[in-house]
Length: 309
Image (cartoon, rainbow, N blue to C red; front, top):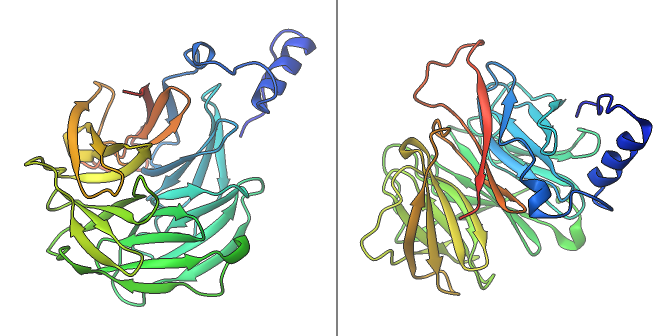
């Protein structure tokens, strides 16, 4: 993150610094409305995942080389704070200890990054053959990763918060059948916290998944989440990004996550194939992956904010 630039007086600078720590100032949605709604990213960055810490720092992953960009949502300014391994970084989540769990895409791996220093705390080889480790969610006691190529979940048990030596493979069984293209993608807990929900991008189907990997199709009452990507759960409201449709579907789920109804879809003229979504106060933040645009080192990229429906 770039340092705060001159604000005219030392007192003004101090006031903003305190508000960034979350101890005073910038605490209301009215104040948040003054935050920028577009955050520029480095040219050629190819963003995909986003995770937001409690203090308003957004972490955005790169499909190009796996680097992670840290931006201050209050100013829109930022910088790369963790250099990637040369393979993609995709979905990400932050735990209460300030650890960033990162899905490694075609690298077939995952890593855990310290959000304060950018240091890699642990790396995990999840697959030895073709893979697309796409997204991650944190539940009580574990981190779970999807693989869009292989019908498995990867589980990192976090007993007492300790990082494990290795991940476990959980085969997916039941209703979810893999086909050509992108399969299991976004992942989130069920509202009651007793299972997981996964979206299958190529079929637009939502599934409830048990801890043992048994899948059951969620009743969407005839709706489809085609091109489904990142998922975000707030209470019983599920936000599902439909990337190439430039839309976010808003669903109301039952507690068990076995039934859901699309209540609306939202979009914005500033969407350009958004991939994932994270929330901060009254807003949703989405990186524009621009999958339908030629990817060059000079291609510009942004993350955009919209009011939370």
